Length: 320
Ligand SMILES: NC(=O)c1ccc[n+]([C@@H]2O[C@H](COP(=O)([O-])OP(=O)(O)OC[C@H]3O[C@@H](n4cnc5c(N)ncnc54)[C@H](O)[C@@H]3O)[C@@H](O)[C@H]2O)c1
Image 1 (cartoon, helix red, strand yellow):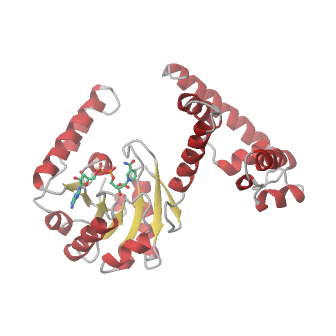
Image 2 (cartoon, protein in one colour):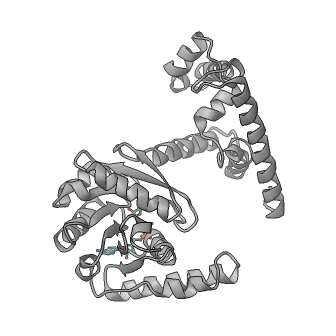
Image 3 (tube, protein in one colour):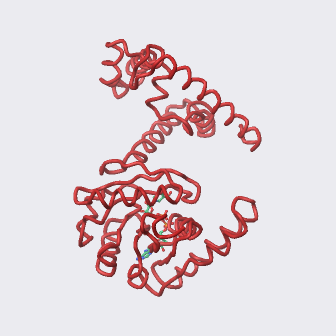
């Protein structure tokens, strides 16, 4: 794909060739971009590139990627240092370890060496983008672009603007991510963003269940993946709650509050909706509004997707 097809971005520098940076570099090279990968030393960058090539070959051998993927991934370059890598880049992706001081140092060097038009992004999982922004000379071109592991296969990416990030930068990055087949969602700049706030809450409660003797880790993994987790490829918490019934959710919150703890008190938003008779799809509105026809379509589409997922799990022989 040419420059326009990638929102004017042709050349990318990936800084840090570990779990995330390596996978991101390979994905972008296979999407047709010019990719430079650097690590803490040239030797480490070359090792990261070797690991990436092995991983790609493994995916080709397993039938997950076409044969051409090997040659496309081999085009990932390893320039001698960070300055050489970012000097030619339209987009910089910082993916070094999750340490504020290290990221500040790397972003400062990027900012000095990159072209004024280059967009600089951080893949931080949790550090506020506004706290990293002062390290970048021109904050208008800096933002968080949070990929998920494994980056080749996970579609979603959080896009996080800091107060100084320009709208133009955000829009260009969103267009770029869509052009390479990802599903960006813009979220606000607060530690952990949305994904890790929710993920960590789930893990915290899962560990509390183990500690309270409710179930083993294995049983909890099974319950999560095969009950409410089964829905998550298709629906988020609001649509799921609307389909379940907000009055039912309120009763569950009340029981949990009484029996488990005050942190489970029904949220005000749920209480207000129930009070107003907005109970979800069954009453025609809840968090969302649904005509009779929309509700029928939604429920049929839900069941069509669940049936397809159940079949896929059986085919993968991975249903339990
Ligand atoms: N692992 C995940 O699931 C995941 C998911 C999303 C975001 N992230 C974030 O992505 C970033 C990288 O995480 P990771 O899991 O890939 O870490 P990692 O430890 O696997 O990789 C980090 C890489 O950075 C390199 N590095 C260290 N110092 C460097 C320097 N001065 N210059 C260039 N490279 C340097 C390391 O040698 C290593 O190869 C972190 O901010 C992390 O929070 C991780």
